[in-house]
Length: 447
Image 1 (cartoon, rainbow, N blue to C red):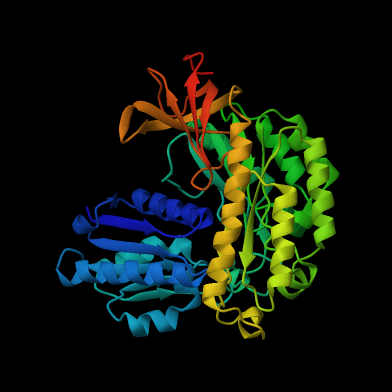
Image 2 (cartoon, rainbow, N blue to C red):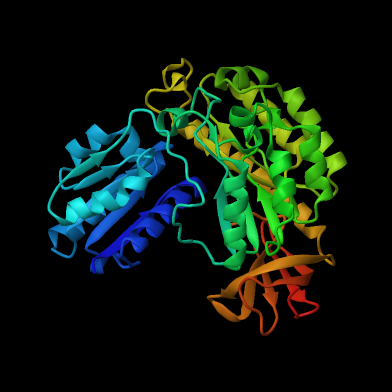
């Protein structure tokens, strides 16, 4: 039995691809190992979104090459976004690679691995990816067993000028509702309590195959499935919200009162250059509407600083916007000129040191906002999903509220006994920090 190591890099959408490859390889009889030194084949599921991610992917591939040179592994396969976008360059720069699997050829991973074991080199990269996962394909969770992502769509049609995702993953294509609901039921049977819906643009879901937005209908159906307690919507494009979608988020208890809405900027001229739909005023009206109609809503966004043409004036517009809206969570990224995108060739490129300064300043503002919000939670009783014990303090458990998405938002440390991962328990908040909280269980029987 050959051992396979799969290293996943990048976003949650990439993670689902790694889980599908893991499931396919396991079903084909391979053993999956987390130890690269004992692996016969190392698969690196690469990210190609921004410069830092590409560099991390290359470093991971070069590390795998070292294992191959030392004789501990027989073959290396590059999969995912970087393999899709730069297949020729990767093969030239890293000739030790034995296989490539682009984003459109995930189902052929077993074929590639078998070929590599037989001493062949296999390259499967399509020009226009069309693959989309369905529930009949094997999938093995690489997350905690109580939490999972469901990819409701693949690709993107928005064509933001800074983004290469349409080149890497193709046009937007929704999954059939029946497949998503069936997958959610299967995950529920495995004990999953939190489902996180993802796509490059979740609020666009259904438009391509049903002729209208269908995220609201999908959420209603998912809310009726026994098992999962939390259903979370991530990566929602701001101009694709419908009144029906807002109503279902507000009315269904299982749907987390949490939305991740990547806005990227708040200056209208920068938004125009980014090819983002809608204006800053439209965004403000949407946020006011969401907060009015969904009581207790937590909002997360991501922003880009240093986009070409961003002067201190445009940046100050963004700063004022952040101070006014007061997001619960926020991520800030410096503009990365991606090869083949219009923004990479635009005049007015901002020096790196200015981009970093603007990012740090904006995050410091958000840190103060987050701390003030957290202080206001002291004394509240909030349901918390237990994720495990704190490594450095075994008497403490760590978890998240429904207002915190996995991996990216804050956590809460809890004193309690006889808790286990996947429990959802009521916790009283006792202390607050910039991003994290401390609390105590007031009733240690899991809900």
